[in-house]
Image 1 (tube, one colour):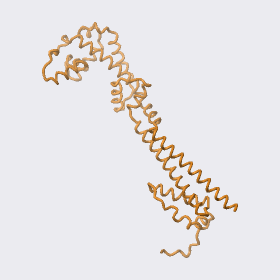
Image 2 (cartoon, helix red, strand yellow):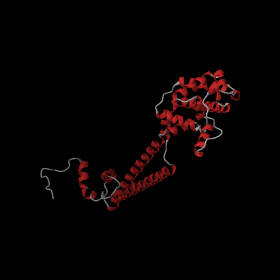
Image 3 (tube, helix red, strand yellow):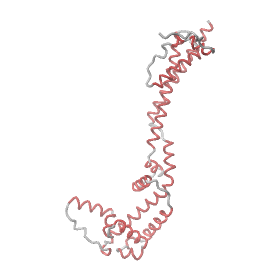
Image 4 (cartoon, rainbow, N blue to C red):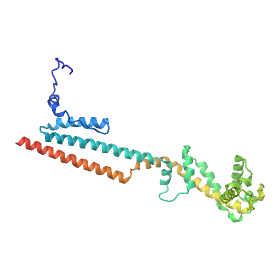
Length: 293
């Protein structure tokens, strides 16, 4: 055993003397296993503090002190778990798709709009009113026409200059001829392409033609209808981009854990709070009787 320091005269303050006088009492009270070092330390400290506060003199009073300390640690554990649950829910809500969907106010959004916004959001876009203006003008030019009157590319050249410029620019960017570009961009033609590839034989419905004057009017009409829809989605996406960052934070802040899990946590907390209050009442009643005897 280590030798005691002969020059040590022990604790000087009243509180120190009180703790020292109960060393034999505290020995063994902290002998409990908890799920972490932090919990064990909190339990040890809580027992010591409760002993100072209540000065237990009997075995029953000491047992009540232990029970109160256990309730205190469990309440802290419950609080930590609840905090972790909210953090997890918040992290799971930090998803641009969820923020975009929340902006719809319960209405079903065009899947293409969601995709275009999610893609743009990943690129850290900025709100660009010029892009919106150009796309609105282009869409208005399409919608102003009676598409059944679109008899071919010549009609587009004569009556739809912005559409003509847009399509020619796209063809140049992708190094495609006019027919191949419009054919590729049309939903029905894409499905037809898949059918031909699967069958492995040429389709009699497909003509290998590349001149603009050979573009079928029905194919061109379908393309213009689809282009107008796509432009509408892009415009809505651009208009909404400005709000996504703010809404993402709102969705994250408002996130709550699963209701069943949260309810379970609340029940655990209530049970431990009641146990603590009951134990405290019993301890105070015992001490009152002891002092009055």
